[in-house]
Structures are given as C-alpha cells and as structure tokens.
Image (cartoon, rainbow, N blue to C red; front, side):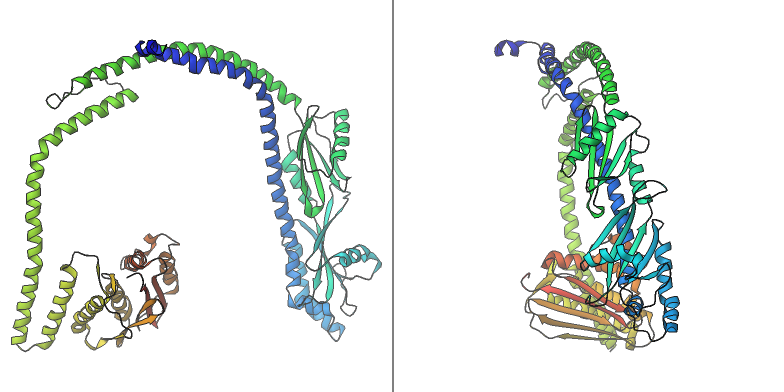
Length: 588
C-alpha cells in the first residue's frame, strides 16, 4: 500500500490527502460539533454577561470607595478632632471654630462627589456644640440608628446599610464609621454619609439597560429591589424568583433552567446579592436558523472548493516539478536562472529567491579575486594608520624641544601634557587600562586647559588608598572633567576649583570629582538621574551643547564592575556639582 502511494503522482496524492485528512474529518467532526455548538454559545453568552456584571460591579466598588474616602477627611483633620473633644471654653469659641474650620469640611464633603446626598456627624461628647443638619448628639432619640451602629463597630471597621427610597424604588445606601482621637483611645463620634441612589441605579442600568433583562436584589434573603425583564413573562418570572430565593447564599453565580439564564454577583461591603435574568429562547431560535443556513452554505462551499483545490494543486505541482528538473541540471559551469512567467505567489517567490541565489553565487565566484586585492590594500592602510600617530608624537616632541630652547616653560609643559594625552588616546587598541593611567591621563587633560584658563582653573588630586594595578575601562574620568570645565566653572565668575579624591569603602573604590561651578538645574538633574537609572529613554539627554557622555560612563562602569556599580550625581545651582563613581574591587 505504501509503495503504491509513493509511485502515485503528486497531484493524486494531494487529492487523496484532501479527502482523507480534510473532507472526512470535517464531515464527521461537524456532526459532533453541531451538538456542542448550542451549549458553547450559551456558555459564551453567559460568560460575556458575567464579565459585563463584574466590570459594572468594579465601577460600583470604586464609587463606594470614593464615598468612604470622606471618612479620612474627618478622621485626619486636627481641627475636627479638637472640636469633637469638647474642650472649648465658651459657646462663642465653638461658633467661631465651627464657622472657621468645621463648616468648610462639611461643605467640601457634600459638594465634592455628586453621589453623596448628605453628610452628618453624631458626637459623643456632650460639651461639643451640636449644629442643625451637620452635627447631632448621639444620645438623642432621632440618633438611635447611628448609636446602635456606632456601638457595634470596632476600630477602623465600617458598615453600609440600606434603606428604601420612595422616589425611585432603588435602595438608598447609608455609610457609618466611627471617629476617634489621635491615638484611637477615645470614640468621639460616628460619621453618617447618605449616598445617592444613583450608585445602585448606575450599576443596574449598566447591566440591564436595553437588554430586556430582569433583576432581583436580596439582602439576607429579603428582596430590596425587583425588576421584571421585558423578555420574561409573569409565570417565568415568578418561577425563577422562587428558585433564586432557594439558591440564595450559594456560591454558584451562573445557571440556566427552563430557558432562563441567571447571572449572580455578591457585593460583600453592601451585604447585597444581585441576580440578573435573561431569556435564552430567542437566542436558541436565532442560533438554530443560523446553524441550518450555515450548514447548507458550508456544504456548497466544500464542493466548490474541492474542485478549485484540485485545479490549483495541479497547477502548483506542475511548476514545482519543472523547478526540480531545472535544479538537477545546475552545476558550477551552468548557472542559468529558471524561467518563470511572472507569477507572484509563494512558488513565484521561491523561484525568485532561487534565481537570486544563482546570481549571487555567480557574483561571489567573480569577486574572489577582487576580495584578495582589497585585503592587500586594507593591510597597507593598517600599516599607514600605525605610522600616523608616531609622526604626530614626533612632531609634538620637535615643537616642545623648540619651546624649551626658547625657554618657554609654559608651552613646554602644555605640549608635554598634550603629547601624553594624545598618546593615551591613540596608542592602544584595548578598551581597558589601569586606574593609575586613567588618573594620569586626566592630570594631563587638566594641564592642557591650564594655559588657557590660567588662575581660573585650580585642581587637586588625592589618592588616599592603595589602588595597585586595578583595571578599569578607558576614558571613564575624562568626560566628567569635561563637564566640570565646560558646564561648571566656565559658566561662573571667579576662580574655579576641581577636586578629585580616591578612597576605599569596603569592597568599593570610591572616586569623587567635584567642582564649584554653576551647578545643574533641579529639573535637568532629575532627567539625568532618571536616564542613569534607565527609567526614561536616554535620548532626552541629547541637547545642543551636551550629549550622552554621562550615560555612557555609567553603562560602561556597570558592564565592567556589575550592576551595583555606577555613577551618582549631586548638584545645586550656584554651588557646584559632585560626581561619585563606585568601582567594585572584586570586579577588576
């Protein structure tokens, strides 16, 4: 059987494979999937409903948190606590401090959130003055509800209560939480916040609006709100209402019975359970019609695509076979491309890539000789590049000797320092050096600047610890000295001073470079620190007169000594700038 299949033409193999691997599995699995389709659709529909309910409940919880945050406004206000302690001497003092400090708090609390209907405080200290509609005595008869809740609450415990609303039928929410003195040792009162019924209304509207859904809200198995959906008849609604009460308190949030889908969610802070009902009859009716229509369409398309597949398969295999024959004739003496009639499909792209490969091979064979000549020329340029630095050193040495003959010591010293600086920069191809050489290089760098700036530039270098032959990346100090000169002391009047100290701190070598220059503005300093900590893109450091030198120094130090190493910057406008490098001793 297998031998026979191997000898069959590729077009026939593709047809056989189509029937065996595509057609039969689609037909057989389609019958099975059809029976699973309805249940999957209902599950997806219910999950989508549940997700909508969860999202709406999150918005509800956010609204509750916003209302609860008013308590912090009262609890953490020292003037409010002093007032509630009842320590003022005269009624005039109470009136004065109430109008001055307390009334603005109530005004802000009532107006800061449209969801808040009213804010009231029940005081426990008899001496504290009561104010109509704002501060009441908790011992009064009308304060019985607040008094009962206050006594039941523990420290930092809060409670939401529900009350019926005559205007909309929605439950009205009331929030209670005690107020204490600074050390929470004495209860000063209880805060009552009445929330607008829009909190519950917005939540229900977000879930059931325009969907024909019904809703039941229970508190301890007692209904506080009911709405029958447009798609539910009276009998179905009564039946599902009884089922909901029977299931109240269970953890099941989604179930479906007798063509009715029920989604539930609990809001523990409110001690409320919300149930939403949807009819699935209309959904199944539409799905049944769509499934039958889809089955007819798929059957017709399957037959049509079978014929098209056979034609396309024959066309593709013919081109592949022709390409295979051509590839067998190709060798190093025959690199002719394969002629194709401009097709731009995947096989056309394969042929185009193959022809490009043939053309590239031909070019490589023809350019081997050129590559050898270019290598010889590159060797010559390398030799020439080695000669040029030596010519530069010899020239500087000649100029220095002339200056010494003329007894011009300043020029002699400047040329000597410049020669050392250039030799350090050009003489080595390595990226590493020793810390001693790095310090010597910046000394020459500062000496080059001395003739230009004269007494305006003073520097002091102190090495207070043994550094031996400690290795370090090249040019980690010079960019910092450039900043000290160009952006520090060059922008201020008077004598400029630069100090460099090298100390040992445990496993670190600490290098501190400081100047008394103009300093760095606070906003610019924050940007530099954020870039060094990789919190923002390094491109923000690029300006017209500064670049990425600090970032490069920091990253090179981290790469060489580890992530714990790096560069720190302290600066103040008019007081100068300090750069601190921490180099790990073990990393060297």
